[in-house]
Image (cartoon, rainbow, N blue to C red; front, side):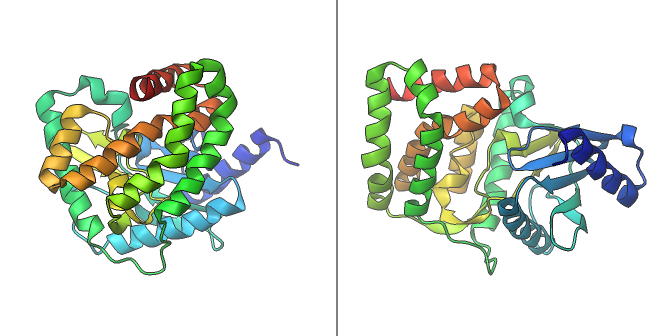
Amino acid sequence: MKSDIEIITKEKEIVSSLTNETFEDIEFVDIGWTSRVYIINRGEVVFKFARNNQVVKEYKNEVLAYKYFEKKSFEVKLPIVKFQEANLRYFGYEGIVGETLDKCIDNLSKKEKVIIGQRLSEFLKVLHESNLPNINKFNISYEEKEFFEKFSISEEFLKKNLRPEIFSTIEFFLENKIKNEIEKLKPNMKLCHGDLGLWNIILNENQIGIIDFGDIGYYDSSIDFSGIRDLFMYDSLVKNYGCNESMLKKIDIRKMIIPILEIPYFLEQNNKKELDNNLSLINESFG
């Protein structure tokens, strides 16, 4: 079995041969749960290499989506695929230079956040009315299964770091409320990004970009609002999109569980700061 260093070196060789960039100009960013990511010039070009075969299936959907979106007009910039391996073990795209919002959100003014919310709403209006063939449909029963899988990975950590009564409340919420409440509010299946949060939104001066469409599919559309945690940006987004009361209730339900679903990723990254932050959010929601 190849070591991580050998794998990274080989993948850098592939990126270098395709782009004519030197090894020194190709930055390996080990933040991807499902991919090894290589960045050139702060995101001008990005390559993603699959960590396993399941990710290859996601790449097929992601590349299909990017090519479909080239024919659409959006308020935001999206990746443009430039390179792809025949079996989609990797692909490369023209990216968006800038910082993800989770890293720069504290430096933005209220006005800037409101404008970003407005642009996101215009993007989602077009996305949610798009029809992309051969893309998976994920009903709430499918999502519920995923919730439990991630909860089981987090269970030991949560038991150790939460009061017993809060842990029991979470268990009850997952087992009895999520699916029932969203079904009661009537799901509204639309083509969705599936993982839209500050971590997948890039800001470069006045330009907004959205990346990582690996989870694209048909979901209840509330999924695309629940990762926008900044209050000013969120209020601007839901107001300009025109979310009704039913949609807002579904978003609130999803917001409660996102910090739980993120725990496995931060455990794998050994990111104590984000683990502590998510524990605080969980205590706030369920305490």
